[in-house]
Image 1 (cartoon, helix red, strand yellow):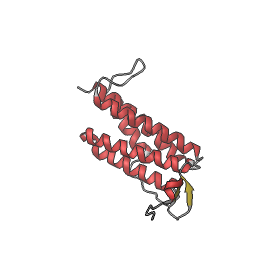
Image 2: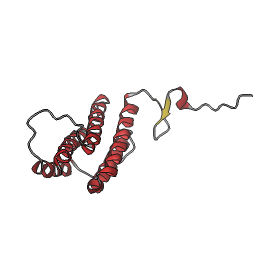
Image 3: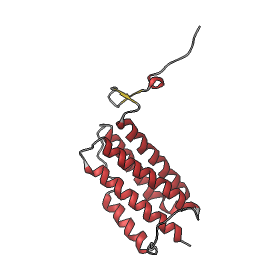
Length: 160
C-alpha cells in the first residue's frame, strides 16, 4: 500500500490567489519568489541594523504589497514611497565620503549583507521587467531601493 501524498507543487504547478494553476517556472512566479527572497534579505538587515529597523520594516511591507499587486491580488498601500527612499539616500550620501573608485564589499560585515540585499533587489527589478508590468511604480520603487541599499552600504562601510 502506497501512502505517498502527491501535491500539485511536486510536479511544478502552483496556484494564484484565485485558484488558477500556474507553472512554477513561469516568469510571474519567479518574480514573486525573487521579491519574497528580497523581503527575507531585508529582514536580515533589520536584525543587524537595529537603528534602521523601522524603516526597513516599512520597506518589507511595501515589497509585500508589490508582490500582491503583481500576483493580481489588489493591494494599494504605500508604506514607503520612492520619495521616502530618495530622502534617506540624501541623508546617507551627505554623511558618507564620495566614492572615487569601484566599491567592492568585504572589509566589514554590515556592508556585505547590505550588498547581498542590493543584488537581490536588482534581480527583482529585472524580473518585474520580464513580466512586462505596465505600472512603472514597482520598477521605479525597486530601482530606488537598490540605490538606497547602495548608499546604505557605503554609509556603513565608512561609519566608525
